[in-house]
Image (tube, helix red, strand yellow):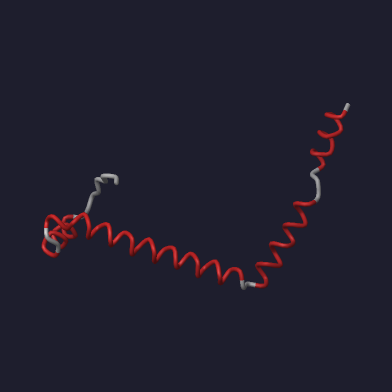
Length: 84
């Protein structure tokens, strides 16, 4: 387990100490962070699913992949120099 020092705006801190007993603040913050991280992960996953279904985006990626398969002119000359 790690200890973390955080800074909160005064109004948020006042709300926190009025809503949560002193010995329960760490657990409360921990649970709130877990909920927020799970939400962010779910949003990221949903964005991935949407992007994966974008046909135009997929076509663009395929076009770029074909460009990556072509050797760069500089790469060819470097390979020739190494074989000499």
